[in-house]
Length: 390
Image (cartoon, rainbow, N blue to C red):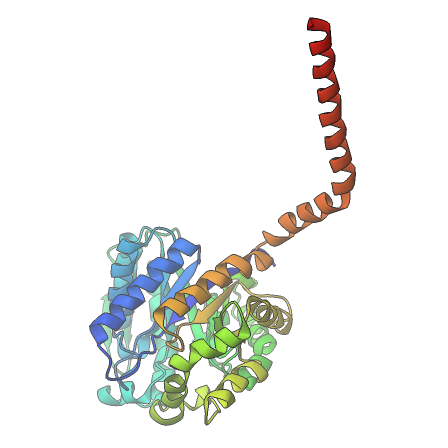
């Protein structure tokens, strides 16, 4: 595989009852921080209930973040397209592509929280069926087609886009997947990328990695799509890194319990089953079940390498799931350490400097001797000149 990209998957997860205005500002500041550190991507979620995942419109957040950043690409992670008119989803994303000068990406899914869809009269089966229908319409619109179609929720009559995307021919599109083959099947059918949100969040998800991409390839071949490029496969995982494991463990005392309790007791999202009754059990669950890394840069590198190996051929981007496990300062430091000491090992930048260091070590003694000889020669030459002048 070529250079592995790194990014963030920002749902976000903030404690209910905290100041939402300040939480959103911290999220924007974090994306700015990641842009300065050289992270490649940030994916922003859409949720409408349960009190923790408080961004209702990833497009609005992305528009604000784009004005604060220079290079990082910004994606909807994900737009719950079952909730929306597919015409307006495509139209808004084309506009966002222009506003960001080609830094926008569209991630799609059925919507993860049943408490969201219930408010508009849809159940999880409905949203998955609509995902298939609406993604097909969106892709046709983005190709410039005129669409007339009646869906369960919307009636499109000669619908078409008045703008073409800024990105030629189109911005990146990716389908979310947790553990089932639904996402990979749609990604292969439409020739788009895959967001494996369940890549490490469940042991089943970890074990299913290679199978996910096999489904993408099989469906792509079935529908006559080009062979899928693994650079469009993004894996989402959990990490908090510090200078020592002891410091990392101390950092997550700040908020890891709140995150676990959200999935254990609040969010009706059983695919995100997490285990742990106390702090130690929670940390052990993350580290020992293979779903993430709480520890040092060495632990982070090992976790990414496990995913590369498990994927049976590599993938395009490692997305770190955002969380409030640690306070904002320690969280930013974790991202810094990953950028400084994990990126290079998967982006081709570590080996050249390590090799240069090794070459210098191997020849140090000989070069040191020639340095001393040079000093001696020049000293003797100077003394001779002085003697001749005197």
